[in-house]
Image (cartoon, rainbow, N blue to C red; front, side):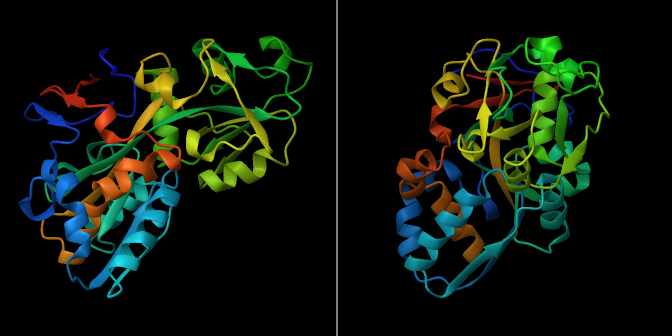
Length: 312
């Protein structure tokens, strides 16, 4: 369990509000208590529901949502679940506008939307995931400090020899603005400092990073743990700590995010049922870890009235 406050992470810039605990004690869409959904999810999935569930947002956990959706649709053949992973910002904007029924995000909605938009949404935290830097196979650096990462992703460090590697230009593959993964990574590395460095390329999705990292020498980027692929690139240590889920939950690896699924307060029954399924034992008990994530029950996040967030 984590017990240290992290004001640097993706939670920076949250609007003030009443002190609240977010984790398993969420309020579900339409006013149901999501603390009960883990026990009720399987039963909800078994009930006869019909309709269309649509989503957009974070590509970091799109594969988890897709896999869960297949299982949900198998149990509920009259429900269609489909969507895309176009980034947290787009997902939150879409659910707030009503063009999708669920917005997936690596960050709290308060960081992307206006207060009057957020008040009409309900947050469901479905998983926690670590995120870390990845380098090309030809790079012989396997550990970077936060200060070194700051130098690289601000454009101050430009050659691998400056951080113990070969004499070669560092190719920085960044994510586009609006990416929750980028927001999480930058918050952990830069803290409160603003950064507008774009790097050599800005990519849309986690899958795009996977592809380009696999075909680019001397490159560095960052991904959530579920998108690590050691056949294409190497995930490296940060401050001497390996990027593993166990090191997130024991507070030794500092870069992580909570995966949120937002819906409107008046969401339809099919959307409610699918979100309940995401918090059920069918998903939390096995599927979350199989997909490279941490169950929400392993970590609880507390947000106080000032917007400061800690994990305990």
